Length: 271
Image (cartoon, rainbow, N blue to C red; front, side, top):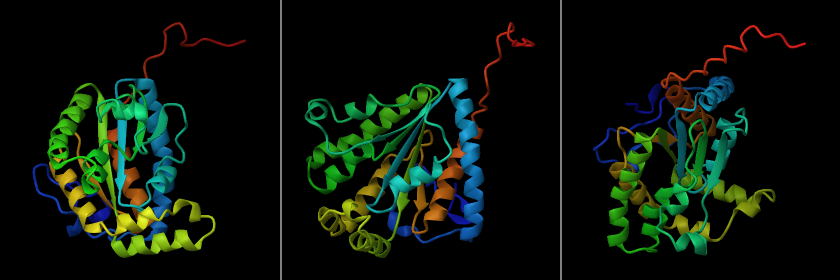
């Protein structure tokens, strides 16, 4: 389902090997920037409407997982796509270096305790997949440990889905040259310099290692119930439309509905 053309996220077939280097991060599906900006404005409003019904319906929670190569735009994607969504029933959870308390628990603990309750959307800005990405690439844990984590993650996501949580996972893909340009912008722009750290250049040297780790994570944790969406993200406007479209389509498929009013309220006049 989905090959990146005609404005659809790339959803690899479950069980098929994925190599993210096979996808074109500069793809725009034949869409123009003007058309994308017009559509995203409507999608934002529709997403807000759907989130309101989700909140009232209280049958499902939505876990929005966002992963990306450095500078691909996780924060700006969240800001853009959820621009019209109210704060009630929608929150962002960002995961940095684990705290001493988090390290004292199993590696999924800090993620499990902030999953969405029914009626809510929770956005994971980075996620449990860091356990098979940065921890793998930088050798923070041995191979024997991270190899077992793919099964852990699949089991946990399956458990969430069986208990009413919609799990949608998005990977933002940019090219190495696009990353170079965005890093240089951070260095050159005084308003963006705070975002840059020298460690970003060290991570850039590990581009192929991260590409391999992302490819394996998507291959091994791409399931029918919790699929990965690969988003060409060189063009920010195209990236945002693909993400918003996928969210709107999923929420529309749930047959969300407002609960019936209390019979004593119908026809009541306030004086």
